[in-house]
Image 1 (cartoon, helix red, strand yellow):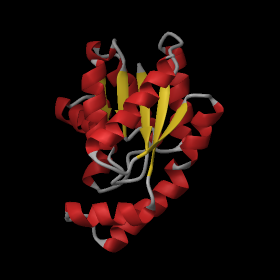
Image 2: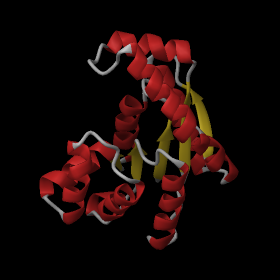
Image 3: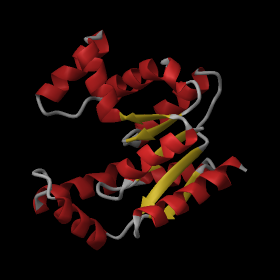
Image 4: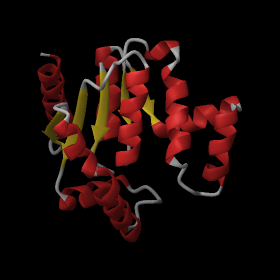
Length: 187
């Protein structure tokens, strides 16, 4: 399966993506991990991305897409993959669709949107207590998500691959909803 997760920071995508990838026997691809891996390997693209990362800037879409394309050629991606943190923007989603079409015409099987109210998100983010989770930083990250990433839900809905799940509840409850979404996409 080829899966994308969509949801705001703190919705539980990272935790659930690892569990789901393991259960399905597919590769979990975090954009951050892909960027760090390319940097550590010292590839040309990795070094290009490192310039942006070292300056605290967002890596441009074209560089991220080329890194993803390079990574999808890995033998561990042959059985499928789950993207956690990619695509983040509509242009990235469109580029991913083109990329998958070039990789043997294998489109996404599923896009899962983690739905959660802002008050619950704020509560979760305060509880996890990361140093970058100050109120103004969190609100800015949520604003960026609403402006840039939230529109992906409509994009994938139009393609008939979107499933929405309620991201509130115990880990097992949310995973059960996620598993139902995966099962419905496979049928």
